[in-house]
Length: 91
Image 1 (cartoon, rainbow, N blue to C red):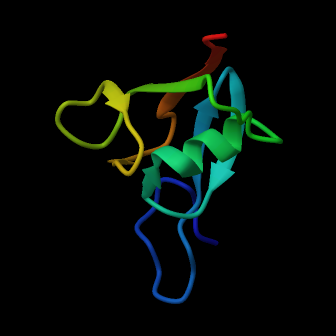
Image 2: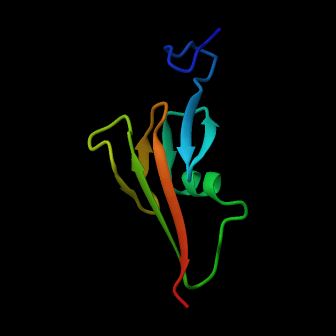
């Protein structure tokens, strides 16, 4: 059986357990985009002309291991990468 911390086996996606807004989520890719993290945080994703979404991360599998994501950017994750996603309405 392929454990979350074992190397990937061809044909079997690797499983990562990450934390999004305090909730454990399971994903099957080692890269997550801004849009992917937002969709894990919100259902439905808040929209509107004045909605601003902020995504920060820590314990990523890259240097720097912490930072922020912006629209169109991605981060390389590992087990227990933590994301904080907030939506504010500037109205």
